[in-house]
Image (cartoon, rainbow, N blue to C red; front, side, top):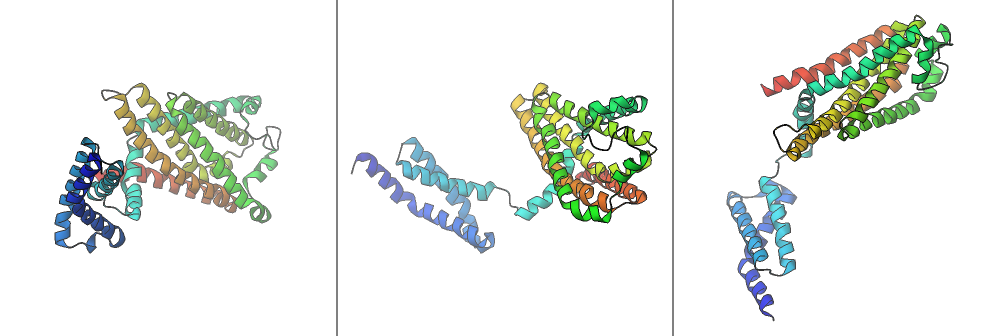
Length: 331
């Protein structure tokens, strides 16, 4: 046996009992939970952890057997995750996300959210008046060249706002799936392209606003303004809110990258990325809700009053959840 092997053997024999005891306690916790440990075991656990960390430090310093070092690294990692890791279950973490993390992250991005909304709805208003003044402005912004054109009659356009029972049965599931996919792609692009100083995010928001403004003006010019706004808002409150939040998250990342403030850029980006990522996860849920409302609710509900009631309720719910609820939680 070489000197190195003898040294490693002696090192292991002097400390192995503590390692095995520590490993056995971790195995018991993993299988049966913390309540399976006795008071003496709970007292011994941090001592055994410190002993394992000390052994790992010594093993690295004197260049002992590589397999021994790997074993101690894995053991110390498991111990660290238990002793210093979060004491929450999966469902507790999900509850904390909805109760605190998501609404507080959205509330903290108030200025970016206002900026995002101003771009999208500002361009929607500009294009709205352009199309009302000259219907030819509709075509550069038309997303779908179908029957919804300035040449269509009011009756033809009205028919697109309401769905017959036969059409409901044939298209609802496919329609909801396609809408969710499209809206998710737009939102993710707004979110992901924020690193380019937010410029692509602003362009996407502006284009989305132009499409909304063009179609709203088209129906408005045919005397269907009240109907089309109700048709749009039953799902649009949730969908457009999600897109605005995606844009705000993109602006937060781009703005922090360009202007990190007094903190180091890497620290500022880490904080911005955490908040933006939290908003991004919640945004996916909002888009799912919007797809259900658009693919099912909007098609099944042909009452304008009911559409407006649902739109108003969802707007009040989101505003309360994002901007009033976080203040009550902090108190």
